[in-house]
Length: 171
Image 1 (cartoon, rainbow, N blue to C red):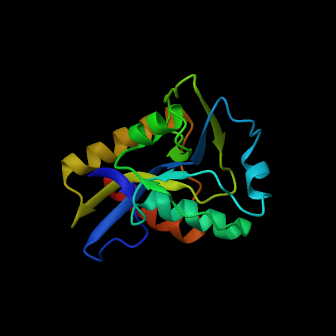
Image 2 (image 1 turned 90 degrees about the vertical axis):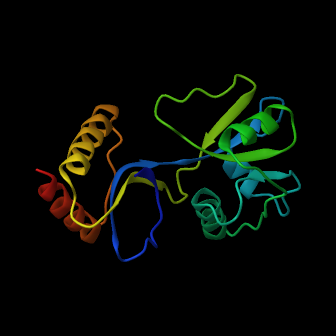
Image 3 (image 1 turned 45 degrees about the horizontal axis):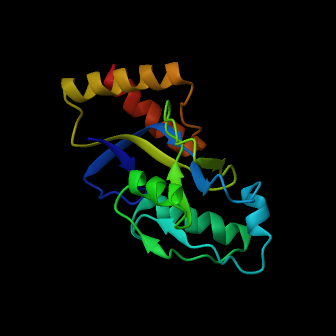
């Protein structure tokens, strides 16, 4: 499956990150906010936070990034999709959390702040057992396309080794 990859996948599954996607903060253009850092400096953030449910990786990574900044800001409105979050931000219901997807264009009514110091979200492959020829072909093609986008993941040494072993198995 091509999906966001959680760090805690069941032991019977294998995964390979293809792209690491940065989190973004979506703000209506009418807001006077100039940067996310300006928001983190506030003693108390009063703007409503629009986010996916708390069990979703995007929300969890955002909350982890806030903890690193020493900021507490809990979701006010939980929405079921990134598209809904953007629509609510457009209509001034609050600030939203999203992903910077390759080739994705946000509404002109939304200002997008990339959250550089927040944990990124891995997008890639999850499969069970030994990779089939089909899974191997999908691995190769997704890696090729990610390379063309210039969005290959920056892996820690241990992750890089296991991914290289998996990639080698794909050849």
